[in-house]
Length: 455
Image (cartoon, rainbow, N blue to C red; front, side):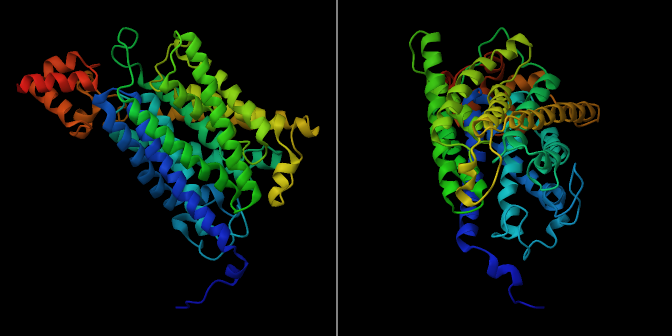
């Protein structure tokens, strides 16, 4: 067996490969970041289940990616709709240049893109928090990655995909990651139904420290999410990180100020975190195409738009437990449209790329291309996701929703047999009837109750 290096290896840039691998690690950090973000926003009895579901998303999608996911998204040839199975089981990936850049090998591009595929379903499952069973969710993630994420990624980033050929611009995943996860969350929330007590009980974040920690992981990891999408250690990657920071900051401040005046002059930590994430989502599709000044506007628009989009759950009467649709679907859609306006030729040219630009460069058709890609991604995701869920719910053993008693006890104990907080678990074990009825007890109350009982 030959051990010589591939002939194309001399054409690769070791610096670009290193940056892509670092970015892979950064994006991986976002996934437990999502888990902690969601966990802190949920009630204590469901805290662990949300963290582990996000981690399970990585495991499930990596297996799917190995079997056929990567090949369906980034095979070297395919139709306008989907790739083929030439790279199924990661065949023939070592020596050839990647679809994304000739300066990095396919194997490096593959592992980087696997992180994008992993985080999308992790984001989506937040809408069904506190009432969706774990085993069916695992099956759903595998099927959804194949039927929803893979086609969208192919349309958007493959040279043969119809959206790419049309001229739609999406630097780092506004449609494949954020619109898809947000719309899937909407479909999941509608299908699985409302939480018990929805409309009568107050569902409060049980651990704001976890929310802030998750936000910090997300913000930090987003440098690899957007900056890494340049696939090179170039000035364009630097600019992508700069505009990512600016949009996150302006989104956070906008959301905080809206809630400050709405809620009686309180600076909310949850508002800051939600606003930062909305700004990060919105800048994602345009991060490699816009400069610092438009990035500030991206964050402000996302802060306003996503904040007020939260009210859609009340108007349309669905229970999106963690506002996934409002932040990711609406934020991603706004980001796509703003990219059509503010994309600049000079920003893309920082690494030698050429684009026609958006309205700011006189290319008035770009907004229609953006609208076409976003709308198609929205429609495909909702229809296919809802069909997947309807079919699964009819299969014995794959019913989506936990039973009433399991929901009251909490998914940590009913589905995992473990709890994020040992003293809460002890309190539930000793007095299950009391704790079950007081299902929205805060962590602090549960701790005090348990300690009092010991005395």
